[in-house]
Image (cartoon, rainbow, N blue to C red):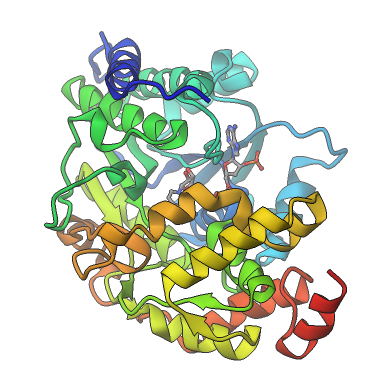
Length: 423
Ligand SMILES: NC(=O)c1ccc[n+]([C@@H]2O[C@H](COP(=O)([O-])OP(=O)(O)OC[C@H]3O[C@@H](n4cnc5c(N)ncnc54)[C@H](OP(=O)(O)O)[C@@H]3O)[C@@H](O)[C@H]2O)c1
């Protein structure tokens, strides 16, 4: 594939931010009295690890009167309630929460007119909503920025809806961003919770670039009166029962390690955050006025704590990252069939692993797996639950691995050799 010039990519990001963030109408209040931000919450994207937790916690929140949960239409013959119930069950959340009279489950799409809803339904939401959580996003690392155009236009529509609110203050706007926007940082100081002006810091994949664009739009919307928070999320781990998407890089690492016979060493810290704690923090941020925070665990643990459990349950030794990558690369060279790659899904993500394990990012200035170090002062200020949360426990780590084992994704330690002989 031809390499696209960095300046061209940066210009595309800037132009998207200008196009979608320009000339936002100022908020003009029609009411005098102050409403609680928790009154009526609109959340977009309530399936998936974080979205399910957000919805579950909003439904039991004592100050939330109504939750509008908007998800895309799926042609799977299920009702929205059944689909959400299945998602909850899979993630160890009680489906009976969906019986709450506070819940309005909606099907639509932010990129369609009126969010894809009937006009009267849209009006009702636009006139009553006091907080918006934009969580659903195309989590696809292969798509270029252009593919996120409908999502960026849809976010503009949501921002305009918020600014047109009759309330004294427009709804608080919470956006699930990513610390991946620091992809190309070259400073060794922890990243601060402030806007990233230079798009070149983020250039890498359309997914991260689109999050950068939305952050710029929200900064522009502040001028028009919107109170927003770009929540730059780090690595989210499993739900309460350990459910953690098998398509993600960490489970792919473990599965591939069973095939290539080793796990990659890292002695540095991880600040991975369980979905339940991340959701709690995001809900607390509704009440704060922080504009940008880094949502990572504030009590990090050494990666070796995870490796110790993984090594026991997965049944392979730990080697250096250089050796792990070498073995994965040589596996990829020899085993080109689709079936062989299914057994070692990290092969599909080789460029990503080369970045994670880059030699120049092996020092203590980075977190484990070359994750950038980020400050969390504003997070702790806006979300009290993040001041001293319990660190990720050995029991939680065991639950993720058990989840992948019982789904048949990972072999049990005792079965690994017989599993390998069938490859
Ligand atoms: N997990 C992490 O470690 C992490 C890290 C940084 C940021 N984040 C952000 O946190 C949010 C939730 O992540 P997650 O881990 O819970 O992801 P997930 O499990 O993959 O769920 C993604 C959510 O987005 C929706 N969605 C998927 N494709 C969409 C599209 N094209 N348009 C609109 N909605 C779409 C999904 O709904 P459907 O059922 O309709 O597909 C689902 O509700 C995302 O915005 C993600 O970028 C997550």
